[in-house]
Amino acid sequence: MVIPATVRDRAGLTPGTELEITLDDTGIRIERVAAGPRLVKVGRRLVARPTAPADSRPVLDIASLIEDERNRWP
Image: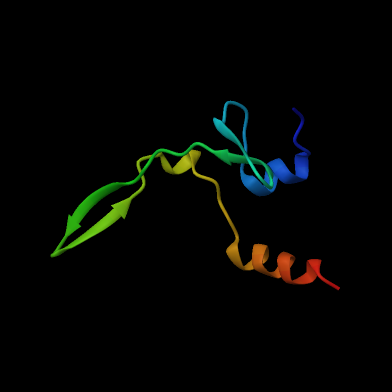
């Protein structure tokens, strides 16, 4: 399967990234397999901390993604 470079870049997919493919009634879904967070006690609260190294986590510009989605509709 070929994923266009612009989509790969936006999703932060790099060679060796594990993907999970599922089929449902609406189509095919492709999702990155990510290590689950670990819970760490900070004071009296549990905080979710990522288990993946910082350099392997995708950098996402949420504001840009929202703006792109808003501009997608005429």
